[in-house]
Structure formats: structure tokens, C-alpha cells
Image (tube, rainbow, N blue to C red; front, top):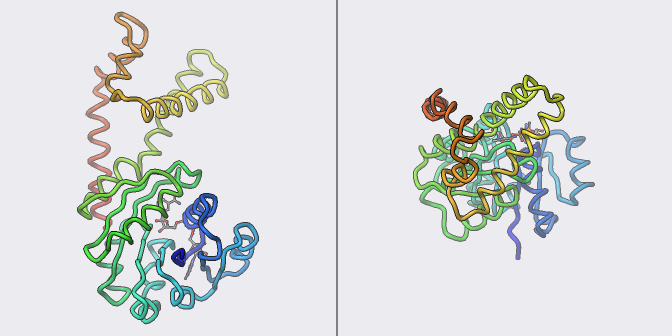
Amino acid sequence: MHKTIAFIGAGNMASAIFGGMIDGGYPADAIIATSPDDTMLAPLRERYGIRTQTDNATAVSDADVVVLAVKPQIMRQVCEPLRDAVQDRKPLIVSVAAGLEAATLEGWLGGELAVIRCMPNTPSLVGAGASGLYANPRVNAEQRDLAAELLSAVGLVEWVDDEPLLNAVTAVSGSGPAYFFLFFEAMEEAGVNLGLPRETARRLALQTGFGAASMALKSEHDPAQLKRNVMSPQGATERAIQHFEDAELRQIVEGAMQACAARAQEMA
Ligand code: NAD
């Protein structure tokens, strides 16, 4: 029997996850999604064949897993009215909300619950996400497997053992897409300055990023070796890499990611 999963909040992240699960064969009738606004839910019923609810507590009363997928700012007002339903049934709680600690969510939901916090990223919306997951001590092995199945529907899943490490996950993969977008912007601009049409420079830069990541994921070599493989002595790539090293790109990346993790910690 498949576990019943209730998504509280049926926005971008929730629909990416349940859409991916259904594509992967999870039965649509084991999924319930909620929103206060039925006009948002009707297209989801139509497209995915899932069950929907405008009342969160009713959805929770039938669920083995509750995925909290509303914006962090409204999480408290969404959680507190669910206390009775959650404490009755003690479902696994999975939160995809940035910055809210497991203990805070547990408190808002009345205490003593198995809670998994997940830090996904925006490429999850196209099935190429990377998520860091933390399970509090009340989560059992079966629940961990289920959460990994859920999040692997939108990409890679990595577990961390300590909750504060989710700040490091934020610095690597949570915010990471923006670093690459910045790099793509800069490559596009430099390509234009070298004489390429903008669209050509953009497509070449994006495909190169995609190709490099695909190759590195499949390769038995680490990125340092793959980089050396592209560089021939005295060649053009070597000249470019030397320029990055002289400009201390590594220290810039270190500083940016330390700043990101520190800010994520402040916001938790
Ligand atoms: P979204 O605005 O697309 O979805 C939020 C949904 O919550 C909306 O569909 C809205 O109808 C619904 N909602 C509002 N009030 C509600 C209520 N009282 N009860 C039930 N549902 C209610 O937002 P999103 O981008 O899907 O983000 C959802 C969560 O995912 C956030 O906590 C965010 O931090 C996290 N997240 C998103 C991304 C991303 O790439 N979009 C990445 C990392 C984390």
C-alpha cells in the first residue's frame, strides 16, 4: 500500500515534487494537495488526477506524510490550526520551507513529531534539483526512505547528520544556481565583447555549463583532473585558468559561500 501524502500548499515546489512522483509511478490518488483557493486546485486535479482540499486539517487527518510547502512567513499560521489533526495521527512531517528549524515546526504542531527538513533548489522545478535533507531523531528508517523517494522525484538527495549543516547546503546547492547564472551572464557578455551574437554566446555558455556538469557527474575523475584534461601546456585554456587563479577566484568563491551560510544561520 502506498502512503498517503498531503501537500499543504500546492504551489511551484509542491507541484514539482508530486508531478515528479506521479511521473515516476506513484499513484495520484495517494496524493492530496491543499490551497485556500479552489481555482488553483482545479487545474491540478485535471492535470495530475490528485485529490485536493481547501481545508488543511481535513487533508492532514488522512495523511501518513505531511509536506509543508507554504511560504515560511505564513508557516506558523498554517501549522498551529493543524495541531489536533497532526497529534492524533502523528504523520511524518517534511518541510521544504527555507530557514525554519525542525524544533520550531514541531513546537507549532504541538510537539514530539518525526520531522524532516529539506533544502531544495529551483532546478527542482525542472526535475534537476539538488536537495539536502535533515531528519530529527524521531524519524525512523522507513520514513527516511519515503522522504528520499519523495525528493528524488525532483533530483539528487543528500542527507546531513546535523541540522546546522543545512546552512552549508544552502551555500552550495540552495543558492548555487544563482552563482552559475552569474557566471553564465559574465560568459555571455565576454562572448559578445569577443564578437559573437548575444544569442549564440548565451546558448554556447549554457550548453557548456550543462555539458561540463553532465560530464563531471558521469566521470570517474574529479573536477580538478577534468580541468587539467582540457588544458594543454601553453594553450588557450591554460591562459584563461591562470587568469582566474591570479584574480583569486577560489578565495572569492570561499568568501561568497561563507557569507551565504552565515546569512542562512542568521535567518534560521
Ligand atoms: P508558491 O507561492 O508557488 O506556493 C505556495 C502555495 O501555498 C500557493 O499555492 C498558495 O496557494 C498556498 N497557500 C497559501 N496559503 C495557504 C494556506 N493557508 N494553506 C494552504 N496553502 C496555502 O511557493 P513555492 O515556490 O512553491 O515555495 C513553497 C516553499 O518551498 C517555501 O517555503 C519555499 O521556502 C520553499 N522553497 C522553494 C523553492 C523554489 O524553488 N520555488 C526552493 C527552495 C525552497
